[in-house]
Length: 164
Image (cartoon, rainbow, N blue to C red; front, side, top):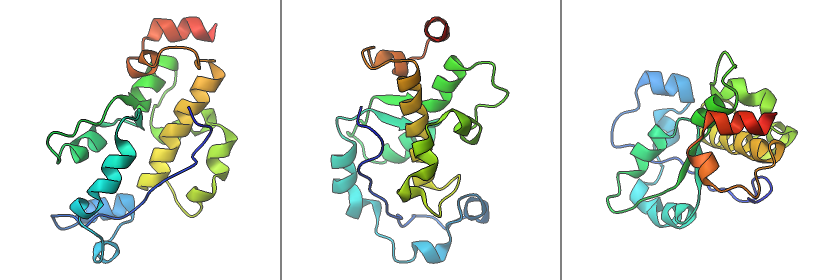
């Protein structure tokens, strides 16, 4: 695993549907922000090249998977779901929301320059938080030599034995 975030790509994408006020309220993205955004097809080559042959990380990765399924024949996998992983590693937490995991992330997360001016529900912020949670977990539990399957299919018993 590379240390920290060394490369990133960010762009708005012109939606096919009108942006609903609820989505705008949660994510802070307005129709004005998207007015000159490229279509997904215009970005597809960059997205495909960036995501192919990589382990992908997201918190409750269903949204990301649905979004990428718009392109039949393109399978991006494997996926590490930081929500599932947090439930396996720390079942005692009252909440496994991404924001609740902030105390368990490395300090590098909150001070990373690409996150300046960003907040929860911003795609880059949430992606970085998911990555740093997994990154911190791998370091704290010394999982560097463990098979990736330990992250892909979290087993509560296995993690409990690693914590003690």
